[in-house]
Image (cartoon, rainbow, N blue to C red; front, side, top):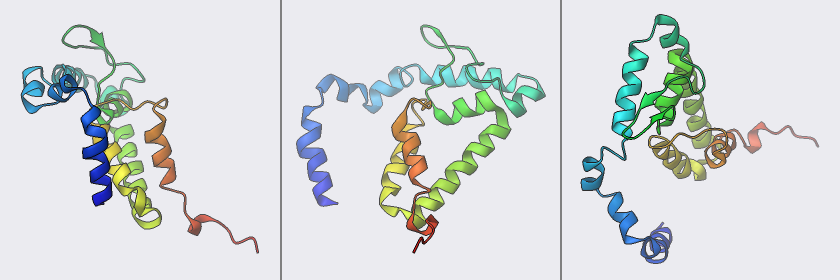
Amino acid sequence: MPNDCYVLFELIVPFIPEDLIERFSIDALTEDNGGGRLQIWKNGFEKYINGNAFNIAFGYGYGGVDVLGERLVTNIMHNQFLQVLFNYGLIGFVLYLWCLFNCFNNIIKNNPKYLGAFIGMLALSMTITTPPSYKPFWVLLLMAFVSDGNLKNTE
């Protein structure tokens, strides 16, 4: 672990532009409401809660929730958990959480070396939407189910 920290803080962080580091400071995030995400999330929740029972249970479908952000109308929530809730409703959200829970358990049991990456991706997915085209997240989820215990002995 100390070698990883050395690589991160000595070899990677110094190359990150200063303006980018300032953009992620607590002051900057509170000043601009997380890049407008707070307004998107609030408007998305209002639309979701004010929907009919069918929309609450099954969602609005892919791209079905259009909300006003700071500058534009968007259907991207910049939060995977909210995106799943709004698109696929409470039922889809529960299924998504069940999938994540099973992946977490399988990673702990079969591939604990991937646990840090899995937790990091979950944290990252709270600030971005991770569609199928965002391969690192989905490949990591699939890796949760890869283990020697799942392979049949062919000898």
